[in-house]
Length: 322
Image (cartoon, rainbow, N blue to C red):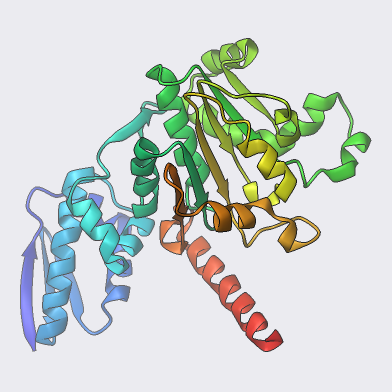
């Protein structure tokens, strides 16, 4: 058996491990073959030499992450301990740069490898397709980029849109005018903007057209120049709708499409324009396609396991049909 002591230099153990050692218990769960004991400002680990060495290396990287970013939570732990790409990116300090500062004063940053890739690809491409599961921060990161571009005068307006496929023909039966009927389907976009733009400023920008939020059908016939345009829930745009949307691109504009091809609400899956767009546009210069996955999920840590369980079930069903 091998024993090693790791010192928590300049770090408050309570802040690192949480009340009642909640996060330390989670760390122990990732290393079941060794015994971990936290006492004061040191951690002692006991076990086979190879396992102790692995733990010490991961713990050293974890401490560096905490010192660099002054935060750690359950999701951070899972990404850092299980995803080597995330750890390498964190170690290089790439997550430090703030995209914008939220209305609460907190910086909005890319928090995962693919969120950071979205930021980097934005600088090199005018059209980006970000596809992947719910909760991976695709739309939130895209909106942060849009707000940054507007504030830095890279563009003159932000246009956010979604297909209102969930509403279908039922819109006519809902109370209120068209705005009242459509706002529930656009609310997630409002929520993200309210996180990054003070309420009065956002209301002013919406009123004067600097920020526009509308269903996809309202894009027909427009040419969007000097604009940052985001199509959310793009998997629910039909082939014709998506072709119409993509051909709205004008000079000095950036387009980002976000969607999840496992959550298509159209009557037939092959009607989704996003599936076709990914197939046709991948590899074209100036267009980037980014595949988000469960490692990018930044909601409650259980969401990752939920997505994995449903994906496994779908794969098993497809194999049975085949």
